[in-house]
Length: 296
Image (cartoon, rainbow, N blue to C red; front, side):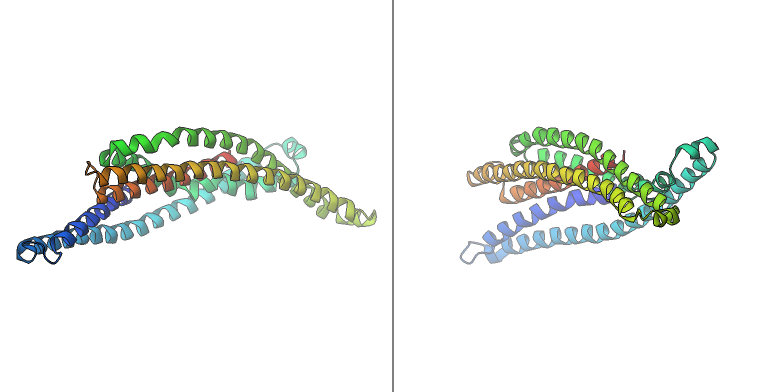
């Protein structure tokens, strides 16, 4: 939480730095009345003060980021070990009839890659989920604080992006469950062939077994290609909306700044930095949503 809060303050300092640079360049310009009698020195002192504040926040952010990474890595390792141990304890307690109705490949698949796919969103992306959620909410608030006019223009693209993301996540979740089942079938077929390799050799059934495994893998690959293609189209649509929002921000904000309105050049840069922060956090959360959907 502290790390995300510091990251929210950095664009504010960056915008102030640009405002102080512009003010200092005007005050210290040769030929400006009183430039060397006080205004130039005051402008440089204010600029240096903001730079020192920015440096302090950067140093604190780096230290807190390392500490946060250590904590989440320790938690992730404990979760992986706990999930694998709990799953095996529950499997080993089942009746013999359960094992008669299940294939060895299915069980090993559940204990192996399926556990990893299920736990990965929790272990790998837990810190990303918390930090990006805070950055998204905080960035939206800071955008409205900086300029509500630009915010009303920029957020016209949010609802279409949310609709496309939700539709793709639901469809991707269904097809990825089918993909994992095909991988499980391929693993079961491979285990059966290896366990009965003498019988397979006796009947010269190596090509048939290889074709059976390859058939399951090919089906999984075909569905994976469909998922990738549709994901690329959804990403392209969202990127065009994001780029269009960026153009609107610079055009409308630049018009207000040049007209002497309520937005300065530093405020426009600050708003653009906050918008980029929101965009990055949203894309990261979108990827997390897709990974959670695939793990469901």
